[in-house]
Image (cartoon, rainbow, N blue to C red; front, side):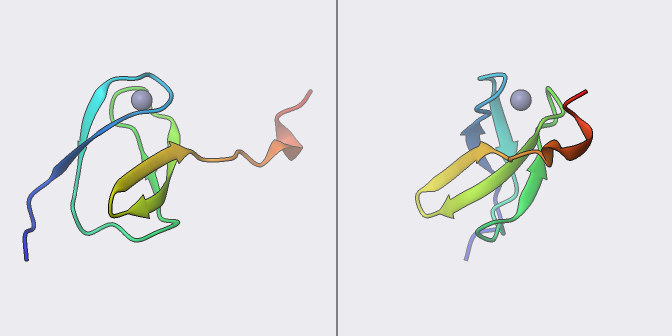
Length: 60
Ligand SMILES: [Zn+2]
């Protein structure tokens, strides 16, 4: 079992990024480059999407 980091492309800033390999589906992570909140949609193959923001406090 590998504990190596793996690469992914941030869906927000489109930069290559690395992340630990012990992710769980629906885990929230943060892009270390742009700081966006991301969500692990799938782990095999790895699929990272932009996390849906809670819009309540943002729409004003
Ligand atoms: Zn990013």
